[in-house]
Image (cartoon, rainbow, N blue to C red):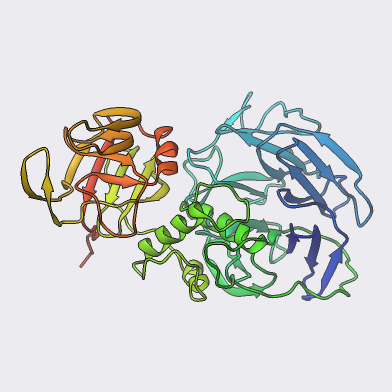
Length: 445
């Protein structure tokens, strides 16, 4: 197993005896590390995919860059020997399809059937991992979706395993010729290996620091004379106004948990603060906008809350009034978590009704019935709302300048203005919209 440090481009390769070999700088922030047997000599060496440039950079051994290949931009890469010739190549996924390559952009004549290119991926695929999972001498590609790893093009096969929010890798850990899963938990700075049954085994290896990216391969004989990377799980406390690489790491990890949709710019601003509040809301702890010392432990143990199962509604919105968050479900997978503010429950004087009323957000099962883009202002009250999605004639999900961590509206469901812009690209009229106080899944007695 090994790690790539985007901060300085260093590679740390760990052999089976636990010794480390550090390779000279190769790569930068934003690169996706890869390892593969590019020349068929039985030894895996580093590679990089640079998404914004559409470039694949390969290096043989410890020398300089050996090859630079043009590839599609902004793809999701995976290293695999799909035809069993002993040479790894890099395939690329874009727009829900996997394009299997056998060299410089050429696809093989077949892959488990005639003319399979492009290969459709499961909706919501977050990452790809490959290995010889059945021991037939050819690598299979698997998709990671909501933490579950499933072979692509093999819907009848049992999943390879569950890695949760960790980063999936694959390797022949015991030398039997069959690859199984591994997972790198960046919050614990720890590799956890899986057995053939897909379950995590007791062996774990502490290695690296948050922000480093895992690789795995047969690296051949290594000097093993270097110091391992600094073992540093988690992040320090930080708050609004902080800046630097540690903030960028926080943003990346919040984004991986579907809590953050802003830029990865290393600036702890309004968007990052709102995502931290949403993180605290989901956990049911004090709803502060500051990242505390204890939050790294919480993030390491973070799991998505249980949500109602609704057959026939693969795309929907769930508003959790108790936690004050909104869950966007797409293709039956939790896609994003957005902070909201619903009705305060307080009495207020209603200009429209001419009397004192209590603010209440209606609970129940609805559908989005109307979309009003941009600002809409009520000529009677003077209140203005942004990108409003009505779920009743009187109540809507909408953007608003003030979205506190507690219930504060007169009945509508408020979201931050930037979230309203983001939701405008994902919602649609007729979409199911559910509002509830607290969901408790049924227990089996």
